[in-house]
Every structure is written in structure tokens, then in C-alpha cells.
Length: 157
Image (cartoon, rainbow, N blue to C red; front, side, top):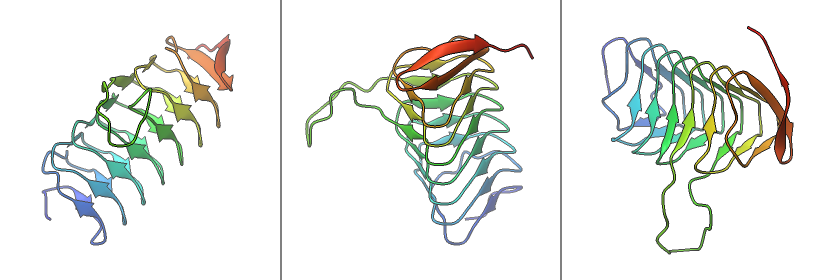
């Protein structure tokens, strides 16, 4: 696939045509056709982006991240390696479920290996520590870590 100003590794399966200029999609990454990816993003190797996913501008998604339907990453979000997003609160095989929307607001950073439960909002410029389990909304500028994560501090820009 050749989109102007977009770099898609030949070993990626990028079915999406709504990708902004300057974005890079690396090898062994799958992007389904309904996804929307902004400009100047970096989607690292071994990622999966489902149909109803919106990624803003200047977003970094490190290796091993799966973005399921209902996840929105606003501009300037950083998602560390192997962060786990979920979209089913009560998973059962082959059973219908209520898809909950997860929103990561502008400038937030999520440390490697964090788990983000469905239906939460992570506030602007929030910092999520590596390995944190996020079970509820995180306010703007909060620093959270642990299992389940709690607000430990509020940082100033």
C-alpha cells in the first residue's frame, strides 16, 4: 500500500487508508480498514489496531500493543511497550458484550506493561506507571502507579 507521506513496512498488514502524512507503521503490525490514524505517528512492530480505533497526531505506540474497538488516543499520547487495553468488562467466549469506550487524552503517557480496563478516561498529561492496572478514570496531570493504580501525586508541567 502506498499512501503519500506514509511509511508502511512491507511486512505490515495495513488495510487502513485513513492515515496522516509522516506516520510510520512497522513490521508485523495489523491495521484494520476502519481505523483512523493521524499524522506523524509511530506504530511500532507487533501491534494490532482494530476498526473502531482513533489515533490522533504525533502518537507513539510501542511494540506489542493491541488497540481494540472503542479505544481513542488523542494527540501526543505515548503508549509504552506491551500495554494491554481491554474492551470487555466481563469476557465470555463467543458471547455478545457491551463495548465500552476508552479515552486517552492529549499528552498522556502510559508506561510499559500497564493494563487499561475498558470504559476509563485517562486525563490530559497524566502519567501511568509501568505495570499499573487502571480500573477507573485518571484526572488531568495525575501520576498513578500500582495495582490497582491510585493517584500518588499531581505533577506540574
